[in-house]
Image (cartoon, rainbow, N blue to C red; front, side, top):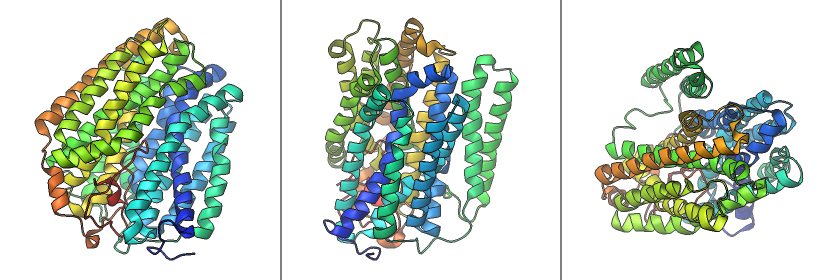
Length: 514
């Protein structure tokens, strides 16, 4: 096994490390989106309600968002390969439970467990690359990881739709198992172990637990309680739990010797604004992908494969244009792309209000997904780079992790809030007329939110924030406490700033712009 920080790009050992990390992260990327394609089929099989379908998505996002910072810290402390492999095994076992689930409730429970595995393997995949490759080769290795992960994300909905069509929705989980076996075999033999030399103090498990209580209580209140009335116990009790979780998180983070949220991380106004924009953009994305594939199947009669293929232009445009958007932001400043991008996202969602009974793909669906994808491609790389550039350099790795957690939380809340806001409940996902009306209202709401995000960017984003990052690259001696987490949850290409030295144990390099 080649020692850590000595693997060279293009060599046999380098290819093995890339293969393990790409395949490991790919199962997490794919499962974050591919399940959407199968939701109508799962609903029919289990005679499930809209709330059950919401929990099928949010059970995974809940534990992933709440524990992803902890997963990075555990890898720094106990070994990135070790925690990565634990996450892969956990994810595989949870996938098997998902495939065997005899009811919607047990499927949701298995998805919650799957999110824990995702939180362990997701930060580890990129951190392993950063720690394993020779400093001269890290940028190329991260670029290859990004591109190959993006391909996996792109083909995921197609493969998932095909499996649902020809076999069963259960195969979208079973297909993870051979991939898990390959990752374990490669990693055990070819991936070097690494740790963070500065990691010290107890791991902040209590902070992560408080985050789960806060997000879980809020999700339960919105999905289960609001429909029974804001005065009902089903709403009041979980809201109280969520507020208690937030209060506990604040208290724990103030006193913890090694908090998952470093003190002062939100002192930068640009960091706060960038994360608010991240919340808006990924909330819109979560709402669209949760509802669009169901709308295409329920209202327009698409097969699962057809629904997965219909949204493919979004991912393709992000893969083709995200790097160019990042370069534009570095050269001219991020304010223009962070204003125009959300406006295009909003325009795409307004076009989606035309997707109703009898709508054609070329006339209604394709224009909407193209404009929506163009907006996302314009905003994702600049928004992540801005968030990291705005944070203090010693916090660059944890800033990346926070940006990732914000995006997952936004998707979680969008899935919880939108059906409630537009009156979708019970078995409405199987009623074309009711679902179509709710879908169109939801797209209008998210378009307004995205437009407000564009206004915020125009008024609050500083065009000079990336210039400062390039003028003062982060030295390797200022490595972050928590390992870096990929800030582009969809697997879109991340870019590296010229002149920056990747941290010895963080993944910050993956989110700077070249």
